[in-house]
Amino acid sequence: MMRVAMAKPLLVVLAVVLGGVQMAGAQAKLVAGIPTLHKQGTTTQLLVDGKPFVILGGELHNSSASSLAYMEPIWPKMVALNLNTVLAVVSWELLEPEEGRFDFALVDGLLEGARKHDLRLVLLWFGSWKNGVSSYVPGWVKRDVARFPRMQPRPGENVEVLTPLSEANCSADARAFAALMRHLKEADGTRHTVLMVQVENEVGLLGASRDRSPLAEAAFAKAAPAELTGYLSDHKSDLIPEFKKYWEAAGFKTASTWTEIFGEGADEAFMAWHMARYVGKVAAAGKAEYSLPMYANAWLVQNDGQKAGDYPSGGPVSKVLDVWRAAAPAIDFLAPDIYLPDFKAACASYTRSGNPLFIPESSAGADRVFYALGQHEAIGFCPFAIDSLPPDHALKDSYQLLAELLPVIIENQGSDRMRGLLPYKEDNERVDLAGYRLEVSYRKDANSKGYGLVIALGADEFLVAGSGVGIHFSARTPGPRRTGILSVDEGQFRDGKWVPGRRMNGDEDAGGWRLQLAGGSPSIQRIKLYRHD
Image 1 (spheres, rainbow, N blue to C red):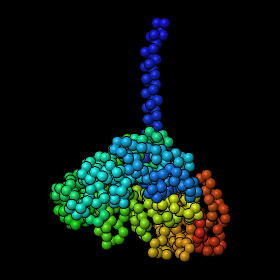
Image 2: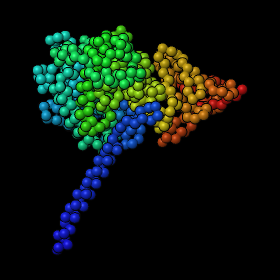
Image 3: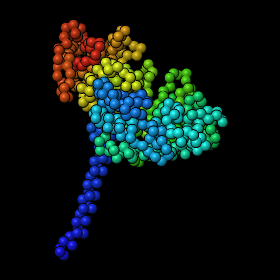
Image 4: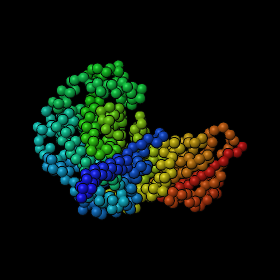
């Protein structure tokens, strides 16, 4: 009896220790496996469960995810279109219908639906702003204008947009977002269905260059924050040129008013700082609960003649990327919503200063995804209104082929061995890759246009995927003058292994002159070259 009595405290101690070890192990598993961003050479990869993951996604209509019953027939459509990820809205008004009372039924239903169909999620937090309007805030926020003040494009003129200068606005949004992230950690911390979170949506002020509410007017009259000017000074040589010119024109001042430091760019700089500070605080509150990658998306400048306010002033357009970085370190990257015809230029504007490319919204061009992944090694591509696409949309074939290619794409990320192929106004272009010049011609007719990507697999060997593309290769390094085609094989990847099909000789390679991808559904060809005099 005495030995049993003496053993009880020891058993209690062992139980506590073992329980602590088990809890620590579970916590380590959660932390180690959650989605995160990782630098690989010159690119940034999204790691999921420790492995690189490329999003072949689509964004739902804004209201689709507000009803689980409405979503039931949509999930199979997403699978049929060969998506691996769905972007879905979680709105503040439905998450917190009454102040302090949170309802996670929709969130849990989205998790269940995605898991059932073997899909991942990126959640879009529609909190204080959506497309420059505060339409998704709860009713208890909308009705209390005194407590939750609005922006004023002109003094005394309230609009349906919360001001970012209000601490009450920011704190209420941040508390709700933190509750969401805390719940995600509990419900998904070991499953990792949710890959990333978008914080707010296309923020900014439309109709005026800056907020002129009393809070904003008082802040604009003060000196620009030293935190901003210090950041600009520390990164002076790397600043985005379109914004740097405002600061430079004013003599690179660091201790003065917004107008004296930024001149004609002062209003947009002021708005960008305060919008980003607000969004950054909301993101930081969420990350304190569950540190998933978080980004902010932008309504883009539509043409060179547009001024701030024609597009949402203060939003994360590429020219104010540096202001957003200084103000919102909790935001991991900025992402463009691209509906412009010059897709290539829009992508290039968001791949500066180390910002990785992720496209949360785009028109549903089956060609654009090839360029984004091949040229800019994008984290992902996601056409908007994906639930409205017909089941036979060309995106289905693009995603199916790219799913085969993803292991090869991922293996070559960060190595400068990939290029995207996409015409804008040109019918032909020249691309230099791995010691060769590629003279690319694009098919253009009423039914289809050329597009694709090319990967240098090794010495004198390339993989080309896409549709309606012709490529003539010529060597650009010392050695024999002429470049010839040794072989061209059509084929596919099965379980990560190349399986050749037809040998594309004779008419199919223009008599040994060039690789040719037919129009229509995308395909893959593998070409080997040799050199001779």
